[in-house]
Image 1 (cartoon, one colour):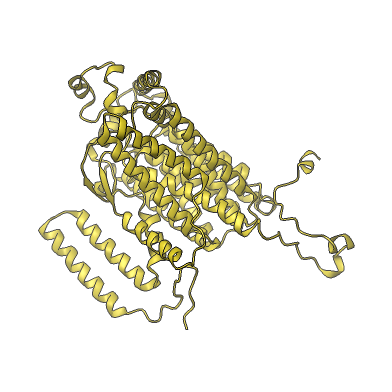
Image 2: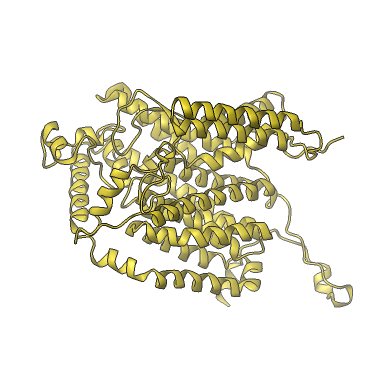
Length: 536
């Protein structure tokens, strides 16, 4: 009889139908060759091989549910999708997208709902932070009912609802220590892949032809490289598969904190090895983005991780050298690449800041004219004409091209589009998530504590990044932000159910060394130090 895991995974692999695997491999290779010769589209070949890999994984693992979870986490940064009803613009949903990860979300949703119907799942909790997001979706519905740009609002509502569904599914799917650690391994493998692609881009000096996965077009990279320095000198800015160097830098700031935190604790050899590789590739890749905002984001995440990583008593006592080594390693990378950093800072094109200030003033004027509910969800770009320098669509297009700009500040996008009511909900959402992340500092398990610290650091990094970008309003980056958010909320739920409901164990001592006072001691379950001890 085969053992089953939490999700019903079979541990035995001896019954794997290897003839099926061979048949799938051969058939997919033939299909890929046929598509490539007849169509010449690499995205179809990639899709075919991805389906092959998925089929083999399901056969090897023997659990569709487990494979679906990790495929979702790994492919979340990619933009492999079908586009319907396109209305392209910056700062919000520009179409109805059927993403490659959507089927895997539905698979997990199916399993969870089936458990609920069969009575195997007693509750399906939705954390309070997500109800605040529901409130923002409801404001968007108000735009559809009472606003003017209804189609744009519908596109954004669909995007927001999909992110909500993904978050709820992940919170209710990742519920054990093993699942948390496995999820982090998958996410860090994604960081390694993205960083490796970015380093390859920089080494070759051009894009790799992976635009169907989210890589920026060569023309866009050339424009960005020619306008980054005041001198007009071309600099190549690596962006991985996130579409832009700034988005890629924020993505690294979001997840590298987890790798740093795991290095500073008693993680397994596998987790530490993956974390070291992620840092070794991710840190220079971050520098090569030449994103000043990304550097600031990472600095904030790094400082929070190193400081809070010492909160756990075990990590604080046993991993002092690792903490010093990480600081020294990051410093060495900074010094080695200091000529690039100094050049980017000292020779930065001032017009970039000037335009951003103009867009901020436009957003401010929108808030003054529509203080309560804003100009409408996903409507900033197409309602800015009366407020900006260019008053007609022709003038805007002649100056900016077909893709009109949005204010590079996510906080102001929310405030201008959804008014003060939406801004209050958005701020309250961040406060709720940060409180959950702060509660996770009480986790006794050193590895999960480190994961919680890294997630908190990354969340704060994206809050800082929101002052200079719209990371969370882009499809793939937003998914990564919400995956991190879901893991924070899932950890908070795990802490309440697994650690607070059972007392902390009393450390065992040799019988001859026990004192009478310790014999009668009873665990309290408290992990944070008492207030009086902090004053001593």
